[in-house]
Length: 218
Image (cartoon, rainbow, N blue to C red; front, side):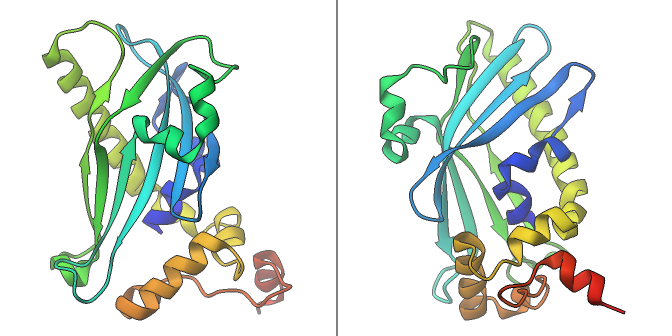
């Protein structure tokens, strides 16, 4: 469920922090190479002194679920400088044409998902490292303070958003037997973490939809 919430970038507006005119304005997928290497784009309105910022960054899932890995985890790497290696056309433009603000960068960042049976916790353990270059001259303490509070707020929203993974919109994608990302994740979980796969929603039969299944249920 946590992977689904993060992967479905066009649904981020359903859970990302937003207050009045501040917060996430838009987000989307710019391109990808295979199911585990993608480039995301987001635009946000932030409090002074950061104000309007956009960011594009590579997202790469590193499979550490094999039995020989200690510990078994899923690592998600985030880095703006890696985006052109996935979408070479980004080298030809300094920014997405629709954006007229400042293009910030995420550098050497990422997060780690550790299953409860591996981490000895009651739920999935989530760890995040965020290095943000806002492209402006501000004191380091202000950047660190802002990033820390932003991460905390995102964490709280992310945690509360898990229930969205079981809504109709998400299940239409995550239960699709032909979806390359979810098919890959399900296979790896079946091989290495079967207890986690048991908690995932069932794959729907080919040719049917989640809505058809729910409407036919008693």
